[in-house]
Image (cartoon, rainbow, N blue to C red; front, top):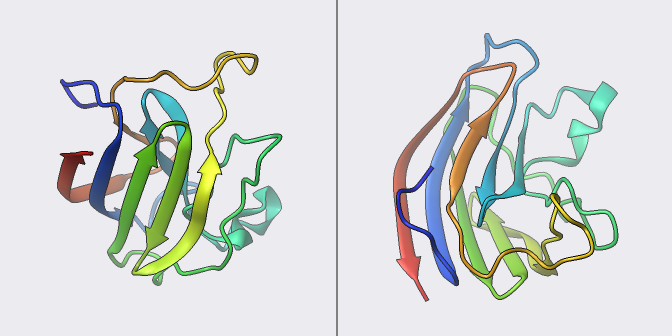
Length: 138
């Protein structure tokens, strides 16, 4: 996670799932809140065929990306993520897949996401590699 806490920001990050991993699944936490999802889109048993970039833990607001823009498993992908207030916009490999959607507070659904907190890279069940991580405060 970042040492610094961020309010409104733009994040650029390249990511790649290890094709030899066990059930590849990862994500990017925004202000300490899960998450912009990273999937192995072959995992249809968990709904991963919708593609990466969605706000996976949203329940009231849209959670799925608008299109599948993932590169082949094992290849590098690029997220551009803008967070302003509670709203998130995500581009995956240059294509907008989430457009100004409210990110819900996973930890306490009665409250909005924190106004300022850390950005975190997460993986479980696999290796996920991250590089070229840039954050710009807005």
